[in-house]
Length: 111
Length: 113
Image (cartoon, rainbow over all chains, first blue to last red; front, side):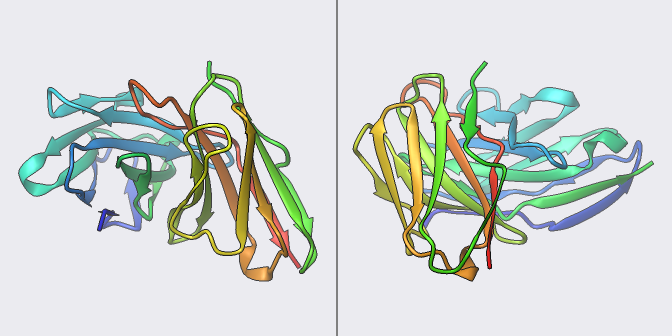
């Protein structure tokens, strides 16, 4: 069965700390992978996506993610977080028509 | 800029009422989706549609139905609302071809009392 696991449910960091959020997926076909972010009171928006090619993808606001096929992982990283990165982050994989989302990681960045 | 709009941001209904949640997208996308978002459970797919008058059950379709009479509009119907349907409901759309990212609406927070 297709599934997405996000290992960290809540993460608290101080400003300028480095961030890595884990995402593992289970899917047998060609994968399209996404990270979405939901800032407080706002709608979900795309951070970055992977379809093919370079496994290191860069997104908005300094975020990047690395697709490691052998590990079925697509971890999100940011070298130095800001208070404004406080949000909930969702990893997702696209199947034939459906998208499967992880349960989300709530990140709180302390000023 | 893609825009997905939902008819209400907040809705309060009584148990047993019929509830309609409307979603409209303005980018001529073939695919449309309804999710519910609950703390700790992420987004769970209720129904999706890949064409007008076409619909497919998602992972949690029980207690819900959908309607897609026009390409730009996808409606979620709660035939008889129950308290366990209190949730945030998100609509999304995506093109069928090309880059398959989804575009989300602002959500409707439904409370069933």
